[in-house]
Image (cartoon, rainbow, N blue to C red):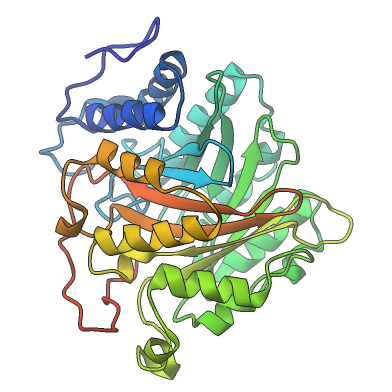
Length: 385
């Protein structure tokens, strides 16, 4: 099969990692309104990122136990929605997934990211400044480097690099984030962050961004809605009540459920994530805040997850038709027959921009997690990575 557009390589067999994910991407590009030429360009990037792993048959185990998804597929899609605009399609990749060790994984990912940046004349100086912090000779942790592509009309994406603060050891993760922020000119930013259980990622915007961000992701285990509402540190961020409402809709928990779901009245499963974005260096104040809820751990099946996503979109005046089409573009299975196709729901607030609702969608190349049996009013308990 050939993707549309001149110069597009022949796709790998459908029953391979690259064939499966490239075909999904082609269908998603159509759903998101990208033309055939753009879709072809982005498919080429996807296949280049996967490298030799693109040809790997799906009846073999994943090339690497990727932390990126539950079934270790090293690719995840997302659709970001704002009112009165076309959705933005994104692809999150682990470009070193077939390299072997975690150290080789990171080096392969760096090569891909730098080659991709050179292709579109994007500087990587901010990433280069941090290489010794995040790419030691013997890295630790669940990942080395992830790369996100924000797919735009014209075939030139925006890039984001996701780095592992625990690369030099989990006990040094906070110091690594503090030092990275300082090197990037955000010396006062670390003190502005809320408390969390661990530092998950440090992310950099690379490429054609109006105001490139440095983002810090924190894990919050056993979070309640009230605690979620108190996480935002941006001056013009959402009121606590808005974040609490988002948390309750995304998780499906009401006040009475929170009171009886775990120690201290909190849900006990995969952690909720907060993300604070920094764009200016003078005050140390973040300019953006996002809350990510792992909806797959709070829903019996994807039918429930989609119902919650729809409710959140409708609260912002956004139709859910594109999201429904996107899930059908990824899989022919019924939403009720599995859980995890809709992995996360997030609400993002960035200074100068309307609020965004984002749905994160799994490829399910290797495995579909079966529906979870639920008792009324109780979220499903899932393994926390």
